[in-house]
Length: 120
Image 1 (cartoon, rainbow, N blue to C red):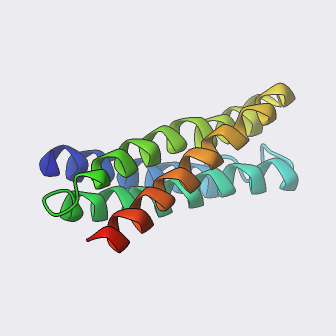
Image 2: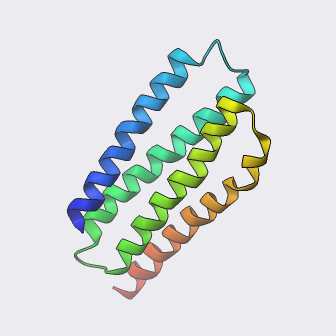
């Protein structure tokens, strides 16, 4: 499981770097400042939670619950960041309605880690 989370986190981080570069260089003149900021928010949260998934890779041998947190972080990246990318690139506003579900997954993942840490 540790290797899976390490690979997943590293892949998500690599994609965040690629998407960040794409946004900075390829989208700067194509998106409005508001849409570019939305895209950048998706990249930022993807990177934060990619690093969290890598941390989960180190925690899973000690805390079984860490795996649950890792999957919640991965789900959050897909839903939160993914919906922001699609919103910024297409202007489809209804996707903003699902973005909070990804945010809730991020919060749940952090809550699981807090509980695991306190229980030892």
